[in-house]
Length: 65
Image 1: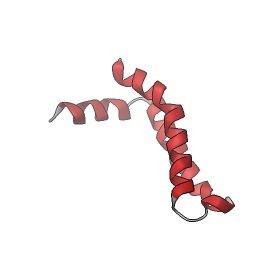
Image 2: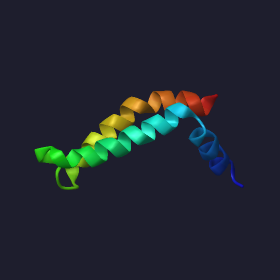
Image 3: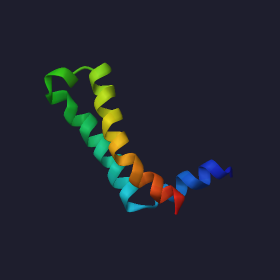
């Protein structure tokens, strides 16, 4: 098993990473009720990127540990 797969598997065992992934999934599902985000495109991608950027430091710290 490659090192990247081992790191990904270790991250998936952390509660915060699962919460972050769930938050991104819920935001994607809820985005259909917002006028600018009802169709997949730039706005939905931008919202997902901003949410991922907000959650990235905590996931990075979890990966470092």
